[in-house]
Amino acid sequence: MKALVFDGTPRVEELPAPEPGPGEALVRVLSAGVCNTDLEICRGYMDFHGVLGHEFVGLVEKTPTRALEGKRVVGEINCVCHRCEWCRMEMFHHCAARTVLGIAGRPGAFAEYLTLPEENLHPVPGNIRDDVAVFTEPLAAAFRILEQVPVGPADRVVVLGDGKLGQLCAQVLATRTRNLVCAGRHRWKLDLLAARGVAVCLEDEPVAPGADLVVEATGRPEGLARALELVRPEGTLVLKSTVAETIPLASVLAVVNEIRIVGSRCGPFRPALAALAAGEVEVRPMITEAYDLAEGVTALARARDPGVMKVLLRM
Ligand SMILES: [Zn+2]
Ligand SMILES: [Zn+2]
Image (cartoon, rainbow, N blue to C red; front, side, top):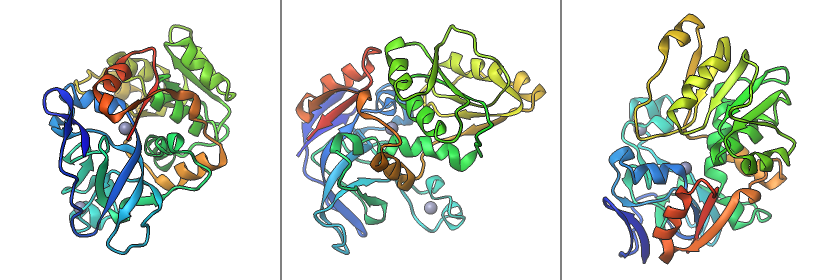
């Protein structure tokens, strides 16, 4: 099979198709999305070498129980042991022995085939197109915020960052409060959100401080400092960006204002699929370009361009 591999540089290679291990399914990948995490991996994040990619939709070719065979699925990316201390506490995303699709210890989705534990797979409702289903994983990450922080209609929320993740976070949080603004650097990206009825502003425009919740999704070191200025005393700051470099933290502001800083990673697939099926979250305007897997290196380079949003690979 063809696969987009990173081993210091990204390249498309011919590899043997993977063999599913015990409890695992073999999935034929239909389409996959390039995520900032993939770009960060190419800069050294997680020290990962192998097949890239973790956002996908595919067709199940074989499973141990045969339950999902022939079905279109998306898949949770953390593959867990069910035995360690964190698994026993049902904190599966933090499994001490986990592998993560295309990120840690497991080949990813930028390939014609992948394997995942059958328990990780979710069937995709028929009305969700392939290109849209690819957004389930990052949308689930946005829904993770609602599992971590209660958000009510009176809460004032600021989302920093108009990239893919920032837009998904803003759309999810806008289902809970109308008192929300998303600040970003790119007018054309903000316009996509504004078309969904979400309030937006450019990064250099003033935003009133005192927000109950600030979500940092800029992927840049300055984002954290701005977030600390905007959150109210005893408010919550959610960190969503995964970046390769270490970001300095003006910790005195966080201490004096007693800010709750919440790291936030992977989230629940069910509400993400439900929101996509119901059209509560709109992702299609975020799709800029699609490439064949054979052009995967070009696709990665394009995804780095600030003039594009989601780049898809079609297998
Ligand atoms: Zn991702
Ligand atoms: Zn575990």
